[in-house]
Image (cartoon, rainbow, N blue to C red; front, side, top):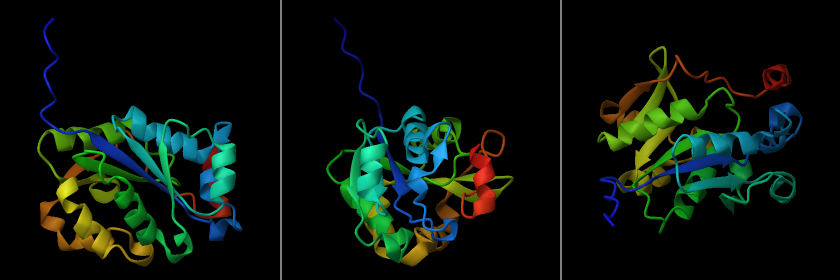
Length: 203
C-alpha cells in the first residue's frame, strides 16, 4: 500500500474570537445571537472548519457557561478569557496561547460578529498560506479586513502587541509591507453586528 504523501505545509488552525459582551446590543453576548436558527458562534466556527482550518479554537468570555450550555461546540476546542471586558486584544492573546502545542503552522483569525464572511473567504486565506504567505489578510474592494492569517513564527509578537480593542491592528500596521492581500469582496461581506440596527442582517 502506497503511503499518502505528507502535506508540504503544517495545518492551518482557525481561531474564533467570540468573547464580546455586546455592550451596544444591550449586553447580549454576540456568541448567542440567533442566526439561521442556531447561536451565531456555531455558524462562525463552522465557517473556519469548512474553510479548511484544523484545529479550530474558540475564545469565549461573556456568558461563557451559557454559551457552552446552549451552543454545540463539541468538535472545537474552547478557551475562556476572564478579562474579555478589557477588549479583543486579551482574547487574541488567550487564543494564540491555546494553540501552543497543536503543531499548526498558521492561524486564520475570525470574529464572531461577521456572519457575511463564509468558508470560501477562509479557504482563500488558507490557500495563501499554502502558497508561501505567513501574513495575509482578506480585502474587500481593496480595503483590508478579516479574516487575517498569521504564521506561527509571528504569534508571540502578535500577542505581545495585542492591547485593548485594537487586537492585531498595531502589529498589522507595523508589518504592512509584508501582508499578502487576498481579495474576497466577490465572495463575502465584512459587516459587523454591533448595534440593534445591525440585527436585521441575521434574519
